[in-house]
Image (cartoon, rainbow, N blue to C red; front, top):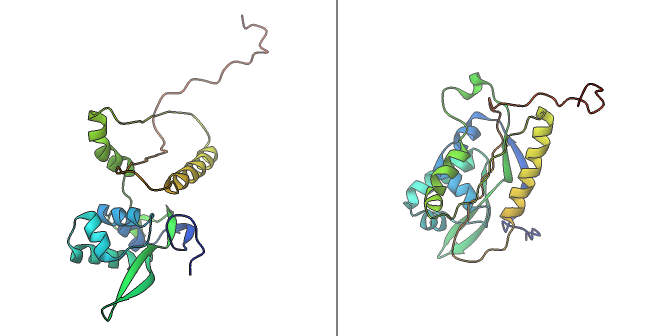
Length: 197
């Protein structure tokens, strides 16, 4: 029996670094991402996932199989239903952190989705209805500080995933941290400069 009292309702690792090309390709498909997202709430059967996604059971079963083969999903429990074992699938980690992979290993296949592009497409209707909350800030900081900040964002995203379920609307939360060619001010002059007015 699981002693996990957080969402989802089964035990799993907090973070797994994903570097294998098969795993990266598995994460690059939007339907597989949707499956992984649903399983952040609770374990589910292929039938439940197919109903939630409004997709054929055979299609969802194929994508679940790809995720299982990539070790991103696993069977977390079974239930006997009319002489058939019904399998409940769960993630292997709350967060899949994409690690470094060489171009030779990755091949030509895309291995990373642009989650901000997905969020932009999903949020278009909310923007039109004036129900979108968003913000963009640009800051010149060292790479290590950017990594530390991103770790805090991941903690916030996990907190968001733990909010009690209720209501009838699914709200999306998107975050991104990326280098830009944006302008930056030069370093400020020292206040101790005697020539400063």
